[in-house]
Image 1: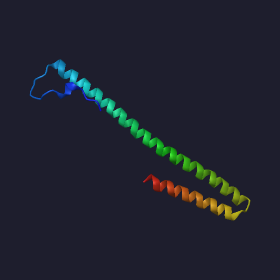
Image 2: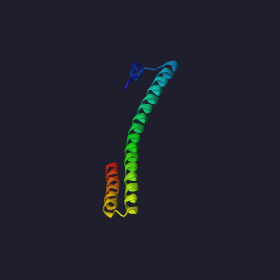
Image 3: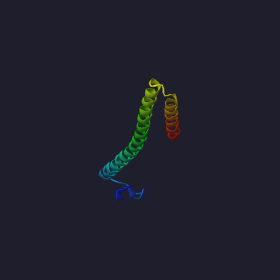
Length: 98
């Protein structure tokens, strides 16, 4: 992170009000910029997790619909396989989330 040279002044010096206001505004500017970068990184991470979760949920939904269709057509082995895939994908998603 960039730091202002004005914040590096010796502590035993007395500063004028103008210098103090200038240093404060520079420090607040850096602080706000750093906080915005941190917030952006956190939101990017959360968005990636949400995208993976939505993908797993969507795929599980499609397999569940396929399994329901197999039940209606009395294809029990395919319906059981579809159920296993749905349960397995949700379990993997929950495990990866931790």
